[in-house]
Image (cartoon, rainbow, N blue to C red; front, top):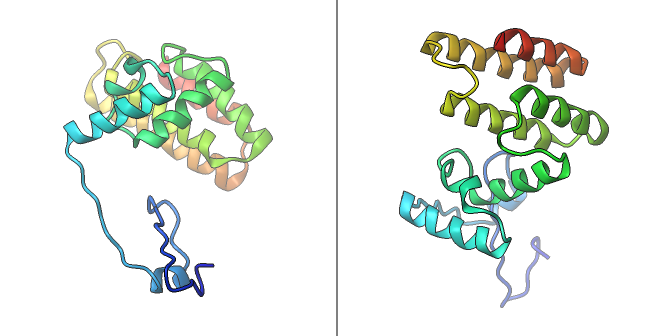
Length: 167
């Protein structure tokens, strides 16, 4: 349909740039970038949250960390693994790695990164540690997640890094 559309057909394709758009589609498209200020983002996010009957506190405090659509996905993943925002980072990581191993869906790794950002920004994980420690912790976790996927490491290899970094 997109290769040879009829005269009155138009398509709106939304790409978050996570994966490259296929070149044949890109060559037949007009690219438009949309930038929203924080008030506009929060307004859209509130409507989406209301529509999905999700508590505002989950997302509004962290609206700068992810798109509204990703908040919805992360919210449902939390429900799926029977966890909450205040669940320990170690426990969240453990549950999300299990889901990733079973289903091989990148969203579970992304969810770990999202909750890492929340914990990092809240500084709840580390009771008054210095910024260099926080940056090292964050970088260690991101590195082991990359290696986890690339080299098919065990869940314990990631969890040991998380546990040792928190201690």
